[in-house]
Amino acid sequence: MSGEATKTLSNDVLWGGGRSPFSVSYGKMMMWFFLVSDALTFSALLVGYGFARHSLPPGAEWPMGESVFRALPFTHGDFPLMYVAFMTAVLIFSSVTMVLAVEAGHRMHKKGVIMWLFLTVIGGAIFVGSQVWEWGHFIHGSGGYITMNDGEKYWVHNETHDTEDPTNAPGFHLIKAEGSRYLAGHEEVEGAEAKALFTEAVSYTHGALAPWSSEGILENEYGPAQYANFFFFITGFHGFHVFSGVIINIIILIMVIKGVFHRRGHYEMVEKAGLYWHFVDLVWVFVFTFFYLV
Amino acid sequence: MERDDIIEYSLDAHHSEEQGRVMRRKIWYVTGFLALVTTFEVVLGAYWRNFLPPEMWQWVKWSFIVLTLVKATYIVMTFMHLGDERRNLRGLILLPYGLFICYLIFIAIWESNYVNRMLEMFQ
Image 1: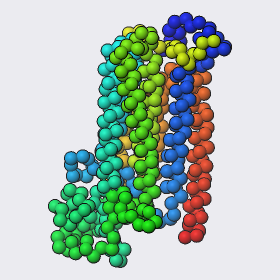
Image 2: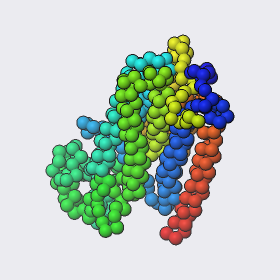
Image 3: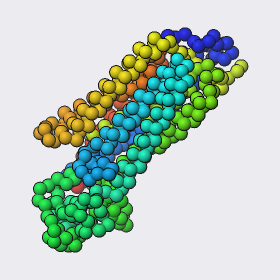
Image 4: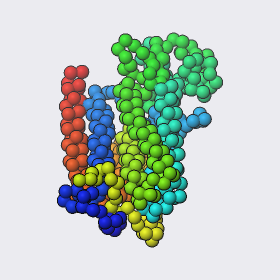
């Protein structure tokens, strides 16, 4: 981009040195400073996750993303990481529409800004909605496991992911667990034998919250309860950023439609909101890698 | 003196049709690249056990981390236009953050190693 100013600014408007430091406007620089501090917050969360995982006692197993997140809405099949991949794609594409809105703003093309900004808002809303579904599914669980007297574990499986009354749900069967990977194991138990095992079980663990005990939750369906804590905190904090980003984008969109920026002569406010929006996307790239993939 | 944080002024706020065409081409190129990398990551993450032996996990993991850093670079430099800003602004943002994050990662690994060793010792 060329370095010339939009219009000659009077020295009163500029900083004491007669020019804006680093040749960016005040607002843009402050947005960058805010993003750096926000990036440190997210880094602290992800590094905290790494700390907890790296200091695990020997023998303890940590859940793997591809064995925890394997469901899609409206289906019952096995789709490891597909839903979160869809969410990632939505967020990256809403980032693309945002950068196209900024580009249209640089050409003072109001209609283009409105169209691309509108698509960005839609993308963000889809992402937040997807996260609601994912949280719901994570809390509810996929069936869970039972623990027997001798410490053996069996995965509980049925077609509707029923955890209230799993034995009477269609397709009920048990799979003898090997390690902590969901549904890993070959020995399947079906019919009356499975129902008998289920009634003999010492405990039934399903979802992120069950079972409650006086010490709180130590183990849930996925493994150590700490995993669920980090899931809720990290994706929750990120989801809150997306939510506020959608609100900010809606406000900016209304201002664009009312022609505020056109009268001002430049669309830099779209660019500043865009910086925040790209940052949210950037954080998700890291959350995706360090929480779901690694 | 009039306060410039209230006055909305802008530098580099306009470009021509021709520059816009070049930028849009670059944006779509980067989009395609990011989509490709993400698809690769998802397929590898979901199905690597089916075609790679378990001891390859270290390599898979490190390829995720490297690809993530590549993606992050493209997002920051192209989408956030940091690549188009002055060099001193780039340094102002990236250097302090980079220094701090390196320290944070170092200290977290160091300390969690210690915690891990203590748990092993007293278990």
